[in-house]
Length: 217
Image (cartoon, rainbow, N blue to C red):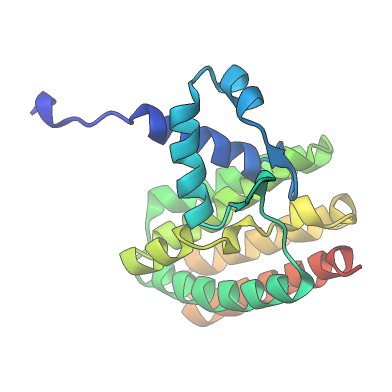
Protein backbone atom coordinates (compact mmCIF):
# COMPACT_ATOMS: atom_id res chain seq x y z
CA UNK A 1 0.00 0.00 0.00
CA UNK A 2 2.88 2.37 0.77
CA UNK A 3 3.91 2.27 -2.88
CA UNK A 4 0.65 4.04 -3.81
CA UNK A 5 1.50 7.19 -1.87
CA UNK A 6 2.06 10.07 -4.28
CA UNK A 7 4.32 12.95 -3.29
CA UNK A 8 4.00 16.44 -4.80
CA UNK A 9 6.37 17.12 -7.67
CA UNK A 10 8.73 20.09 -7.59
CA UNK A 11 6.49 21.83 -10.11
CA UNK A 12 3.45 21.25 -7.90
CA UNK A 13 5.24 22.61 -4.84
CA UNK A 14 6.44 25.67 -6.76
CA UNK A 15 2.92 26.33 -8.08
CA UNK A 16 1.50 26.14 -4.55
CA UNK A 17 4.18 28.43 -3.13
CA UNK A 18 3.65 31.13 -5.75
CA UNK A 19 -0.13 30.88 -5.47
CA UNK A 20 0.10 31.31 -1.70
CA UNK A 21 2.29 34.39 -2.14
CA UNK A 22 -0.43 35.92 -4.34
CA UNK A 23 -3.26 34.96 -1.97
CA UNK A 24 -1.36 36.35 1.02
CA UNK A 25 -0.86 39.66 -0.76
CA UNK A 26 2.93 39.29 -0.81
CA UNK A 27 2.69 39.56 -4.59
CA UNK A 28 0.33 42.44 -5.29
CA UNK A 29 -2.06 42.82 -8.25
CA UNK A 30 -0.12 44.20 -11.21
CA UNK A 31 3.27 43.25 -9.74
CA UNK A 32 5.73 41.57 -12.09
CA UNK A 33 6.90 38.08 -11.12
CA UNK A 34 10.65 37.96 -11.69
CA UNK A 35 12.32 34.63 -12.42
CA UNK A 36 15.58 35.70 -10.79
CA UNK A 37 13.88 36.67 -7.54
CA UNK A 38 11.74 33.52 -7.39
CA UNK A 39 14.72 31.27 -8.15
CA UNK A 40 16.46 32.66 -5.07
CA UNK A 41 13.45 32.85 -2.73
CA UNK A 42 12.03 29.41 -3.62
CA UNK A 43 15.36 27.66 -4.17
CA UNK A 44 14.36 26.12 -7.50
CA UNK A 45 15.45 26.42 -11.14
CA UNK A 46 13.50 28.31 -13.80
CA UNK A 47 11.88 25.12 -15.17
CA UNK A 48 9.39 24.49 -12.33
CA UNK A 49 8.72 28.23 -12.16
CA UNK A 50 7.79 28.23 -15.87
CA UNK A 51 5.51 25.24 -15.27
CA UNK A 52 3.90 27.04 -12.34
CA UNK A 53 3.38 30.23 -14.40
CA UNK A 54 1.56 28.24 -17.09
CA UNK A 55 -0.80 26.69 -14.57
CA UNK A 56 -1.33 29.96 -12.71
CA UNK A 57 -2.17 31.73 -15.95
CA UNK A 58 -4.68 29.02 -16.89
CA UNK A 59 -6.37 29.53 -13.51
CA UNK A 60 -6.44 33.32 -13.77
CA UNK A 61 -3.86 34.17 -11.12
CA UNK A 62 -1.34 35.75 -13.51
CA UNK A 63 -1.14 37.16 -17.03
CA UNK A 64 1.84 37.03 -19.40
CA UNK A 65 2.47 39.97 -21.74
CA UNK A 66 4.81 39.39 -24.68
CA UNK A 67 8.21 41.05 -24.22
CA UNK A 68 7.12 42.47 -20.86
CA UNK A 69 6.83 39.49 -18.52
CA UNK A 70 4.38 37.77 -16.18
CA UNK A 71 2.27 39.82 -13.78
CA UNK A 72 -0.17 39.12 -10.96
CA UNK A 73 -3.68 39.59 -12.30
CA UNK A 74 -5.42 42.96 -11.90
CA UNK A 75 -9.19 43.39 -12.12
CA UNK A 76 -11.29 46.19 -13.60
CA UNK A 77 -14.44 47.32 -11.72
CA UNK A 78 -16.67 45.54 -14.26
CA UNK A 79 -14.68 42.30 -13.88
CA UNK A 80 -14.95 42.56 -10.11
CA UNK A 81 -18.72 43.03 -10.23
CA UNK A 82 -19.20 40.11 -12.62
CA UNK A 83 -16.95 37.85 -10.54
CA UNK A 84 -18.80 38.67 -7.32
CA UNK A 85 -22.15 37.97 -8.98
CA UNK A 86 -20.93 34.52 -10.00
CA UNK A 87 -19.32 33.91 -6.60
CA UNK A 88 -22.64 34.74 -4.94
CA UNK A 89 -24.48 32.12 -6.99
CA UNK A 90 -21.86 29.41 -6.51
CA UNK A 91 -21.33 29.97 -2.79
CA UNK A 92 -25.09 30.16 -2.16
CA UNK A 93 -25.34 26.67 -3.67
CA UNK A 94 -22.35 25.52 -1.62
CA UNK A 95 -23.90 26.85 1.61
CA UNK A 96 -27.18 25.00 0.98
CA UNK A 97 -25.36 21.75 0.27
CA UNK A 98 -23.14 22.23 3.33
CA UNK A 99 -26.32 22.29 5.44
CA UNK A 100 -27.72 19.19 3.77
CA UNK A 101 -24.64 17.08 4.52
CA UNK A 102 -23.18 18.60 7.64
CA UNK A 103 -19.47 17.92 8.14
CA UNK A 104 -18.57 18.34 11.80
CA UNK A 105 -14.83 18.46 11.22
CA UNK A 106 -15.13 21.13 8.52
CA UNK A 107 -17.51 23.13 10.71
CA UNK A 108 -15.02 23.12 13.58
CA UNK A 109 -12.33 24.17 11.12
CA UNK A 110 -14.48 27.13 10.01
CA UNK A 111 -14.81 28.28 13.62
CA UNK A 112 -11.04 28.13 14.10
CA UNK A 113 -10.49 29.98 10.82
CA UNK A 114 -12.81 32.79 11.90
CA UNK A 115 -11.09 32.99 15.29
CA UNK A 116 -7.75 33.41 13.51
CA UNK A 117 -9.34 35.99 11.20
CA UNK A 118 -10.53 37.99 14.23
CA UNK A 119 -7.15 37.80 15.93
CA UNK A 120 -5.37 38.88 12.74
CA UNK A 121 -7.69 41.90 12.46
CA UNK A 122 -6.86 42.89 16.02
CA UNK A 123 -3.16 42.70 15.15
CA UNK A 124 -3.82 44.80 12.00
CA UNK A 125 -2.35 41.94 9.97
CA UNK A 126 -4.22 42.38 6.70
CA UNK A 127 -2.28 39.64 4.90
CA UNK A 128 -3.24 37.09 7.56
CA UNK A 129 -6.86 38.25 7.31
CA UNK A 130 -6.74 37.71 3.56
CA UNK A 131 -5.39 34.19 4.05
CA UNK A 132 -8.06 33.27 6.61
CA UNK A 133 -10.87 34.82 4.58
CA UNK A 134 -9.81 32.74 1.59
CA UNK A 135 -9.69 29.62 3.79
CA UNK A 136 -13.18 30.35 5.15
CA UNK A 137 -14.79 30.50 1.72
CA UNK A 138 -12.73 27.58 0.44
CA UNK A 139 -14.05 25.47 3.33
CA UNK A 140 -17.66 26.27 2.43
CA UNK A 141 -17.01 25.11 -1.13
CA UNK A 142 -15.34 21.96 0.22
CA UNK A 143 -18.31 21.26 2.52
CA UNK A 144 -20.66 21.27 -0.48
CA UNK A 145 -19.29 17.88 -1.49
CA UNK A 146 -19.88 18.92 -5.10
CA UNK A 147 -16.74 18.08 -7.06
CA UNK A 148 -17.83 20.02 -10.15
CA UNK A 149 -18.46 23.10 -8.04
CA UNK A 150 -15.00 22.80 -6.44
CA UNK A 151 -13.43 22.30 -9.84
CA UNK A 152 -15.16 25.39 -11.23
CA UNK A 153 -14.02 27.56 -8.32
CA UNK A 154 -10.46 26.24 -8.56
CA UNK A 155 -10.27 27.02 -12.28
CA UNK A 156 -11.47 30.61 -11.93
CA UNK A 157 -10.09 33.73 -10.34
CA UNK A 158 -13.23 34.51 -8.30
CA UNK A 159 -11.52 33.48 -5.07
CA UNK A 160 -8.80 36.10 -5.53
CA UNK A 161 -11.17 38.93 -4.72
CA UNK A 162 -10.86 39.42 -1.00
CA UNK A 163 -12.20 42.35 0.94
CA UNK A 164 -9.23 42.02 3.27
CA UNK A 165 -6.84 42.74 0.45
CA UNK A 166 -8.91 45.22 -1.54
CA UNK A 167 -10.81 47.50 0.84
CA UNK A 168 -8.99 50.48 2.37
CA UNK A 169 -11.61 50.42 5.16
CA UNK A 170 -11.02 46.80 6.04
CA UNK A 171 -9.81 47.25 9.60
CA UNK A 172 -12.75 49.54 10.31
CA UNK A 173 -15.32 46.93 9.29
CA UNK A 174 -13.47 43.72 10.21
CA UNK A 175 -15.66 43.14 13.29
CA UNK A 176 -18.80 43.15 11.12
CA UNK A 177 -17.09 40.88 8.62
CA UNK A 178 -16.23 38.41 11.38
CA UNK A 179 -19.81 38.60 12.69
CA UNK A 180 -21.08 37.68 9.23
CA UNK A 181 -18.80 34.65 9.27
CA UNK A 182 -20.31 33.67 12.63
CA UNK A 183 -23.87 33.94 11.30
CA UNK A 184 -22.99 31.78 8.30
CA UNK A 185 -21.41 29.15 10.57
CA UNK A 186 -24.45 29.15 12.87
CA UNK A 187 -26.88 28.72 9.97
CA UNK A 188 -24.90 25.78 8.58
CA UNK A 189 -24.62 24.24 12.05
CA UNK A 190 -28.42 24.53 12.41
CA UNK A 191 -28.85 23.00 8.91
CA UNK A 192 -30.96 26.01 7.96
CA UNK A 193 -30.48 26.08 4.20
CA UNK A 194 -32.51 29.23 3.52
CA UNK A 195 -30.74 31.25 6.19
CA UNK A 196 -27.31 29.96 5.19
CA UNK A 197 -27.94 30.96 1.58
CA UNK A 198 -29.26 34.38 2.60
CA UNK A 199 -26.28 34.98 4.91
CA UNK A 200 -23.67 34.07 2.31
CA UNK A 201 -25.39 36.24 -0.31
CA UNK A 202 -25.45 39.22 2.08
CA UNK A 203 -21.82 38.61 2.99
CA UNK A 204 -20.62 38.58 -0.62
CA UNK A 205 -22.71 41.64 -1.54
CA UNK A 206 -21.23 43.48 1.44
CA UNK A 207 -17.76 42.55 0.21
CA UNK A 208 -18.57 43.84 -3.27
CA UNK A 209 -19.79 47.16 -1.86
CA UNK A 210 -16.50 47.55 0.03
CA UNK A 211 -14.19 46.43 -2.77
CA UNK A 212 -15.68 48.36 -5.71
CA UNK A 213 -15.10 51.93 -4.46
CA UNK A 214 -11.39 51.20 -4.04
CA UNK A 215 -11.19 49.69 -7.52
CA UNK A 216 -13.13 52.29 -9.45
CA UNK A 217 -10.78 55.07 -10.22
